[in-house]
Length: 268
Image (tube, rainbow, N blue to C red):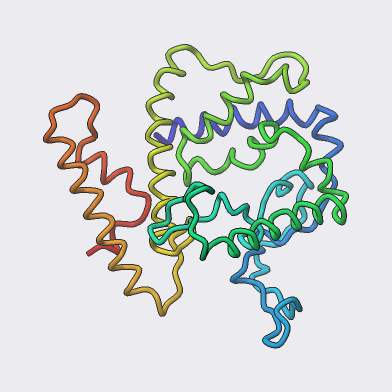
């Protein structure tokens, strides 16, 4: 509900006001200029020498932020290979089952990931301390305003984890957010739905060759639209088949539609 989103914003503000009093945050908040969308599609390289960067685009989200805001962001070209879909259906393949043909790609991706991490620590000193922080401390700053996009359950989960680890993280006093037993019980079901959506979205991103926003190149639109339609129909048929088993806790078709992560408008 709108009221729950507003309540979480107020709680997040109280939590952040306490966090910024901590030396842990103050020492990692140096003003830093960030390109917030530094991914492969926004980087141009030389046709003759792909190691030579010739230009960067998509600067409209560039801003000066505290160093910790994007400290643990990793662009797609530096993603760890375990986070990259390695099969045609977008699923991860255990290292021991990878086909020989993908070994070089896996190793190349691992080198990129490790090189990026070393460069961030060695050549961007403002980010060094921030990247060493427990990420639980930083999530309220990053996600408190995203409940409209990721769901209230996602933001609430970050606040619950911070509350549970408050003193373990070296923070003084008690967390301003102390959820009740009833709130935790209700949250558990909502968060399970959120995790279902995220797993489904990750699979779709690999299957449709898109990002979390569902962006695809214009020339791939019709192909992606057809693949999206097929995936949605499979999802709904699986839901119908499960419902016929008569087991408890099986989602309804209405719930399945609600959990689908992309716009159904592209299915018709």
